[in-house]
Image (cartoon, rainbow, N blue to C red):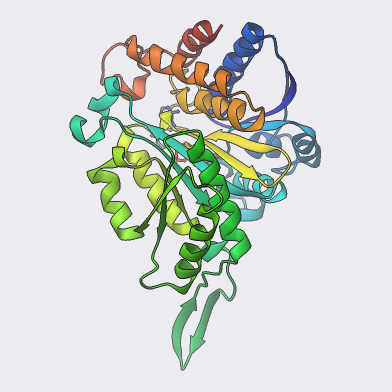
Length: 356
Ligand code: NAD
């Protein structure tokens, strides 16, 4: 297969971890006879420092033409003084908006060898392997009317949580399709006992479920889901939920594995290129030292192979290689607990050697 991958390394540890993801993708291409070409493009603080907007027009155009976009992270204190529309984060938000990415996928898997880094007891965490599918473009964060006002001389504020049946149906389909490749269970999370938008959500998810008779559907109220994520995380397979519930639950889930550095993500649209990036930010406190954990970036590359290029075997090979390197005892500084740590580049080399 031939594929063009737009690489937006970004700021801070972005370039350090993205280089490992590219290294692993190049090793996959060599081993399996694919031709991947990587196009490095500016975004965020690096673009601003070069006198460009946070999302340069040429970067956006190249992303649109690419088969997939691999991103590191953007931002840093040196740009915090800029007005919000000109800050590095505006580049990433603009890219997500322009590519119309409505589904955010965050898988989370507990490696038994790293159970000590988790705040949960090892027996509670054991077997955890879940995927959170979050609706990204609707709901409370975008609904109108929104804003602050003064009523009868008192300060007031309003936010609105709108969803249409089409918005719910398309995100539900992403979740059911993903479940087909996994353990075939979808947990739809809502607050249907209180919210009208959740009642519509539940109704539509039930309708979509009829298209997937081989996948089991269960419903869970968001408060129960928040509790179950720490009591019985291994009971979940695919969790699908609206924007704000997904924002909160995916960060709660991230806390289960002990370091942000392990978590990958994918953002998908209805058509066009999709975006793959680790969940973490630019980690200015450790940038430039070669000690960042590249697993989130490498597993994002595995998601790119699976979802953008339709290469599930290659994706599985990368995921197995990461698990093997961890099982062999290699630890980056964030989870080494003061013991011997492997650097970012060395970790990437070891994963690449195993997929090659
Ligand atoms: P962060 O994720 O960058 O860092 C939080 C903590 O986790 C830090 O202690 C950091 O050292 C650690 N950490 C993060 N990734 C790690 C890795 N791969 N290996 C080891 N340790 C890791 O979040 P923050 O400190 O709140 O934000 C720093 C900057 O990143 C800010 O400018 C913020 O706006 C930006 N940010 C960008 C994105 C993105 O581009 N998607 C996401 C979040 C934050």
